[in-house]
Length: 209
Image (tube, rainbow, N blue to C red; front, side, top):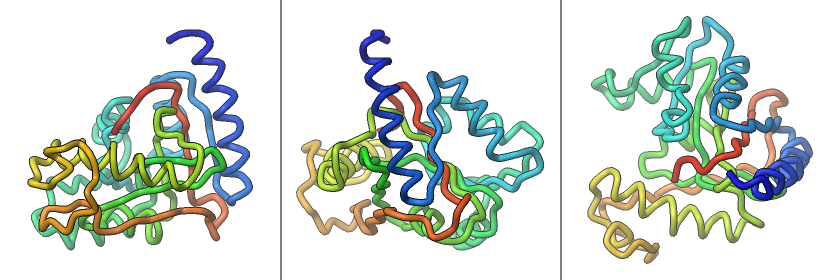
């Protein structure tokens, strides 16, 4: 990565972390995937019960494999036949791992969901939520973060899941009411009432969607 981009990301991350702190959330900066993995595992702690949404970034930095094979109790929702049972198990987890569709420069997290399993667990339930966020997800404000979530993350995820939404065909949001829409629930996390619950690891890389 170009040294000027690295420096820019470091400076921007400091601004984001200051914003997160003002919102009762904790921010961390990882210079690379390896550092992000190390920070995440330290925050999780051995023996923890861990759940996650469909977090591509966790896969990309090796965290999913680490919690599956390490000294953790991993709740593998793919192995649970009943979706409601998987959801309830996640609510009771020590740690919930998640990516974020977008994050503003002043520390506001923006996420959209189809079944709401991810956004509901972010909002309430698990004792600790750890976000893994590539610096490519950082946006100037909530409006641009929402546009990113709807016009970048949503179309790619719709294509990934093989859904028949307008955005999967055009690459842009049309504010649809398609039966396959994944833009059913919108969660804007602007403050955490519970200190020590929400942690955001900013990663100096292009990760996730």
